[in-house]
Length: 459
Image 1 (spheres, one colour):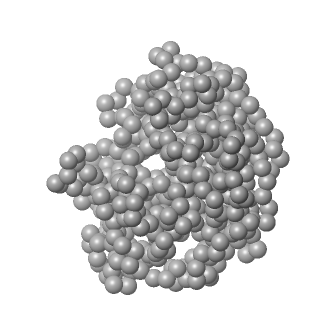
Image 2: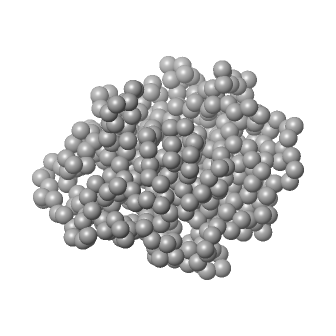
Image 3: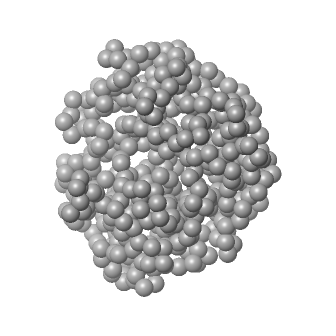
């Protein structure tokens, strides 16, 4: 999954009848666009199609770098696509979906759909269906996969309300009211953070919501409704336009915001309770190869950070970084490990990280000729296990859109949405579920992926 701000940016919609483009520049978030994908009834064109699973072992690494083991997981194309009930999902695993013609970021009168691997078709949850004059949107599944949050807007009102519901719709309640320029995201299974504009007078400028104005406003425990307000964020010395909020972090009773200053030149850890701040990730500062297109920060559920920087030879990586480590002044080469990738994988992008695993999703980038401006197509899907230094190659033309990409609670399946025309959002959409252990695939046509759920009764 992506960072909290990634989620907020993709799900956020203002309360107006006309669509307002929210151009939020997210530092360290890859821009994923694709010129074409395969129809769900067709097998994505593989780069290679070996009908065996024999690992390809690369040479032993030299002391100054690491070279992962490459494992091909490439079923025979003719047999690769299987029914969902044949993919191997545990029966208690659920897929939370919306129809393909529903914009999950727009106001709309709809509930959610739940698909179990035992069902023949997704089942609608009507209890979440809003009454007349009320619209639901911005659905997000909780980290424990038991609840779904969403925003509600009532016609004629300026503000909106945050709600949560059980996946079966039998329990649901209002959590809090938030401003029209605000959104909410899960921090843990017990906490949510509201991100928005402290000064809503900044408003929109020519249809664009200024990203520099976004800050954490307060956190709330949705099951107790306990709320913690945050202090106003002081303007940086270089000016507010050079500041971007990137991540919210909870450490015990203390709450912090990570901000990027000067478009990636500096990183600041802001104490949201007392207003103090300090520099972090200082070994990244001043490096020519560190910028918003190459560098990503990933916060894991154990409270540690992983940092990745894509390089011509592969990826520089640091993992297991605790709060003390990220505040130290260290040399880049002593912190970041050089990961050498095979030439046939390059150039590569890191498109997703997952808080409960040591997996990173990699995709090879290929420039499509004949377009102006040039179009990058992402294909060749790889799963990088950086704890065990292995890379799984699925020989799969992924064409991922990247809106929501997530790994199942048991860590063995990946799901996302494919778009027929990802540049324009038009055309068909369908859910793709990939078995990460075997490379087999299932398609769910006419739906889009919101998240993974768990059946309480079967857990």
